[in-house]
View 1 (cartoon, rainbow, N blue to C red):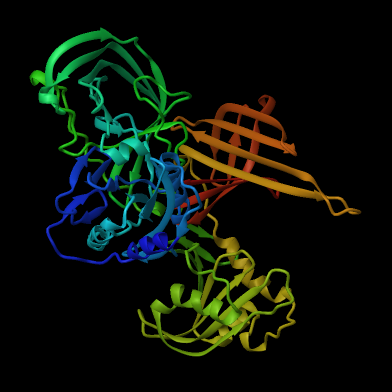
View 2 (cartoon, rainbow, N blue to C red):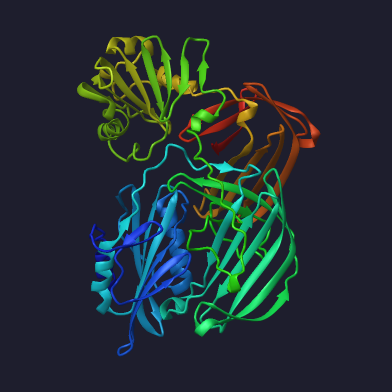
Length: 628
């Protein structure tokens, strides 16, 4: 185990070393001198072997993929895909604490595995952030390479990135797929990885404006003495979010390797491939962190043309095609050409709240709500309230004072100075504990003296109150932070909690086109009251998806499952009809059993998107989320 811990410690020392560096995707690094280099579209590897004693080391830098939303989820997915599947480690990984650098979160793990009945180690370093994740995999069977690994890791730098104000969004316009899109895959088995015999298959679509397409594949394998070239052409048709590809001709050619290398030699044979018409669901997905669009194709089952699914949890049953780099286009033999059309320069999406029809609400009681980038601002007279969007790090496990102070430092302090008379109150008898911190401060923007309070209760977000002085705050909201004891009644918080209701905006028909989703689930464990033995667990979960079209039609898909001790029942319903929108109301035709239903509706603003709330009377029927 000492070897493992030593290996892990040297992997902690990422820093800046200024030397002649190479770059690949999100990484810049200094390659190990004299090591064999292998390049595929998805990775760069460096291999060292010592034939005298049988030792070896391999460093692999992998191309980034779409993040699953957190460093923990990304690391676990990468560990399963890159380490468990390839090396079958003999024990769980030894992990380092997550750390952060330049906005990237970094997590490392190392574990032993057996190779040719001898001990070896595999280490995974995963970075996550800016909607992307990427990894470095190091495998080794001897300590003689530790210094090389240490030098390499010290040279690694992560790409400096600034998160754009807009979130990732989708684009399903008819012209959005014009251009060339590529994907590649390789066999990542431990034998190939450790013996430097990596293969690859590259697939490449080119969609033309006249409704035609071409599709090319190239397959290379060191174990084969031939290269395979697939060529297909035909037509495509877009209808809503559906893309139908209809091939007219598809062939597979066999070519020799020139001088045994990855170069086209002589044409050997050709055979026709069965034509495969496939209807895909397509999505253009904009990655704001790297300012790149990806083309997502989804189908009910894997196809011969596209191969196995990409395996990304964010898009089920999908292939993720990216714009090929200028060096990554498939070069055809004998001067053959595929017409490569320049992919249109799609602009980055607008700021998320600017694309909605209604970003201001005037309430009957005089409050005015305005959606802004980091909060909803609610004003009345000389009082301003900021309903902050959820922000990472503002909720921590701590006593009331450090808990409030932490949130204050993140959400409030940067905009004020000269804080005075600051006090925190947090009664402990309430089932949902409330936190209130308040004090006098100077507004950095206006130079005025103001009274600022920051409040949160239970699972609510943080809301900030700005008034000219303390007396104005107390008069309006009835709460004095200096007079709140540990046994204060929960009723004193009602005027403050009421402000969350002002995060409310009308709905326009132009806001709805696209996909809106919701999911829920619950579980209950049963125990015998006499014996205390566990009697089993009941669970239920459901998902609802609404797809609103530009022409005012909609499709809703409901799926549900419930069960007890593994015996499950499944239910589902799909409805198609018209959606008639009138500010605070949505009428949906042809619902369950063909009925027309009318709902009260409203938007709630969140960071980078909206939540659509649908009510039947005063009871919330559904809430659906979408980034836009």
